Length: 444
Ligand code: ZN
Image 1 (tube, helix red, strand yellow):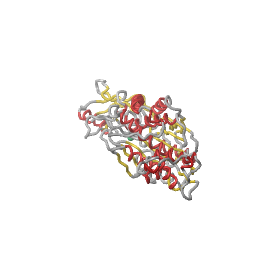
Image 2 (cartoon, rainbow, N blue to C red):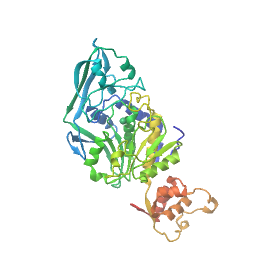
Image 3 (cartoon, helix red, strand yellow):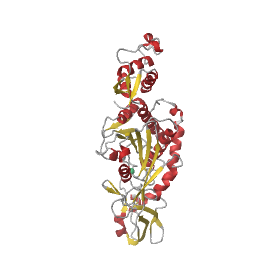
Image 4 (cartoon, rainbow, N blue to C red):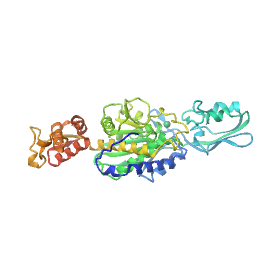
């Protein structure tokens, strides 16, 4: 993970990061056994558990609802599933591991030979002990996922196969925690809630989103914050279809995924590439993380693919540790509770909080006395500068902010230009604002 240095804007870093990491891990452990899919009782149970932590507003979108080019599917629920051999032994048992059933499998109850069963069995030949995670949301089929070793050991037999699932006219659930701020400008943080027992993808992101919301619940906010818990793809599309007007208010977005496993932090830029969230992430990673990677936008991944579709083009980046598909445990039973660690979760939390704080504090300011320097000494703002010209004193930060406070450079731009820490530039702007020498502006 490397050494991480904390930025210290306000009190938020006095919270014990280690304790927060443990609490996040505890939440993941609670949610891990639940069998989730894009709809169904598992999502409901997950949201009930999350609402113990933070206030949640849950929206129901009925099956059959058209959302842009998509249709909300029927609600899928599963009670039990198994494969029994001719001795009546449950050799595959959904109740032991919910990854055994292909998500959105059609119901089936039949007796069949190994030959007839085989096309319905999925395994990973190159990872012989792991069970894969598979879905079949938009085509009618059924299947079981098993380890390659198990598959190879299967004998010719008459098997009893049962998937006790149902498809009903129900609802797709979209949940959000809304925290109004001083302005209507919004920061949106999103995660997905549609995976069964997989710890890093995407429960780690759920836990991180919950704990970021818990933090911002307690502090005063300039932006309005929205923390979204959405079933992947269809949930995100439905949310955007139902909140098209509000989406316009989104100034900064961050999609979270795979934040609890090993590996260094990866930040994927928004489609715009140089949005404030991209600059803030780049700044925080450069200043506080030894090893990280920043990548350009690609049109696949998590919620950013919908938010960054050309009709919205919302500046949303995506933060993860090792990204999806790039670690062997991804979408397998090995993405379990031993794969995620409290320390990785805490580190991801710290990075996200720093990025969100840069966005909260950043802004455009205008010098109210731009013709020559205002007389700072008379206001008690300029003390003994001569002797300390080389350092990064607040006095020098005042001069940077006054000079580049032209309405075109953000505080983050000034921090980058001057090499001064963002916190110091922010502090200088606040001091100048209090003395009437600087005025905040909504946009450049
Ligand atoms: Zn996934």
